[in-house]
Image 1: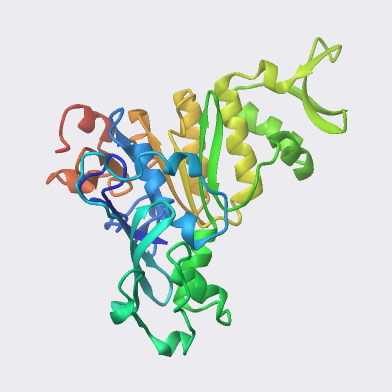
Image 2: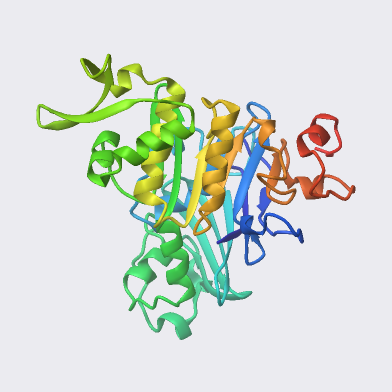
Length: 369
C-alpha cells in the first residue's frame, strides 16, 4: 500500500505537496483502514486547487517503471511548474508491504527524462543512481549481485532494468513495489470522453467487456439500485455487439448509449471497471468520480468501494454530503489547499466523534484549512 506520497515542482505544485495515509485510532469503520494505513480516501478541494494534477502526479511512476497504459498527452504539456526556477521535478513514494517499508525517490526533467533514482528498504539505501554523475552510484550487491548497469541511459529506469534482469522473487521488496505499480489504475469520466492510466494496455469497448462478462442481468440490477430501470439486451451489428435499450414492450429498441444520460454513462464506466479489474488492482484513483452523479448515486459508489477492501482507493469530490461518519472517517477524508493535503483529523484540535456531523463542521469552519 502507499503510505505517503510527495511531489514538488510538478505542474501547479511549485512547493512540496504531501499526502500521508497514516491512519488514526477510531473504533468505527475499521474496514476503511488496513494495517494502519488509510485504504479508502476521499479528497476535497476547491475548483482549480490541483486535485486532478495530484492524481496525475501519483501516477507518474507508471511511465518509467511499468509498460502499462500511459497518458502521454497529459504529461507532455507543462510538466514542470511554470513559476519555478528549478529544472528538477521530484517524486517520493513510501510503500508499506507486509515485511518491509519501501521508499522510492526520483527526479525528472520531463516525463521521459530521468535524472536520479534512490531506493531504500526499511531506511537502508540499496540503490542510489545518478544518470549524469555515475562516479558515486551505489547498488547493493546483496540484492542484485554484479548486474552491469553501466549501459543504461536515462530513458530506462535502473530499477526497471534490475527487475527485468534478475530472477523474480515474489517476496522481494522491489518486486512487490513494481508489481503494485503495475496494478495501479487511474481513470476519469468526462462528457467529452473517458481516460485511464495503468493496470492494462490499449482500449476496449465497454459493451464488449459487458458481453464477455456475462453480467447483463447484474448490470441491470446495479442500475436499478441507482433508480434506473432499463430493459436491455445485446444485438450483433456488423460483427460487433451492441447494447440495446428496449421500449414499448420490446417493439422499439435503440442503442443504450443514445438514451443514457451522462450520469448513467458514468455509472456504466464504473461498473465495467469494477467487474473487469477490481479483483486484481492494487490502487485505484478516480478523478471527480461523482461529477455527474446525484448524491445518492455517489453514496452508492462509495459504499461499493468501501466494501472492496482488497485494494487502496482515492476519489476526488466536491460533494460534502459524503462527509459522513457512516461513509468515511476523519482520518480518511482529506482537504486539499494550495500548500497542503490534510485529513480532517489533522485540521482541528477538536476531538471528532462518530456522532459528529462532519459536513456541518466543515461548512461552519471548524476545520482549519
